[in-house]
Image (cartoon, rainbow, N blue to C red; front, side):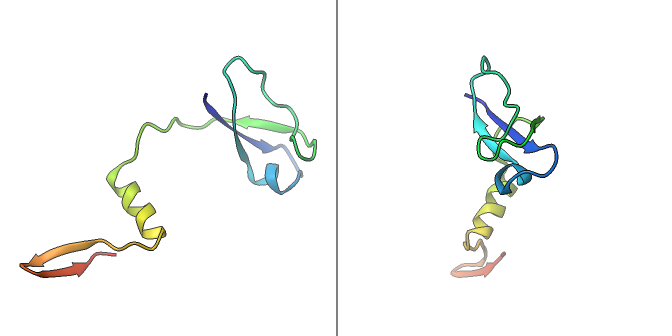
Length: 81
């Protein structure tokens, strides 16, 4: 089932103000109000995720605290990030 992103038109609670994702069937009707606070919301058009590029995976690994090493010479490595 596809993920849809919704956000508040104005105001709203912390969940809908920042936007939230929800899994819905294509046949389901669009949500018109936040499930938590009842504020009016709109569905935001998003580009589909087709896969992860190597740079995206490196970025996520870096954010998680991992480091990448590059081989300089036999037995020597330098830290890339």
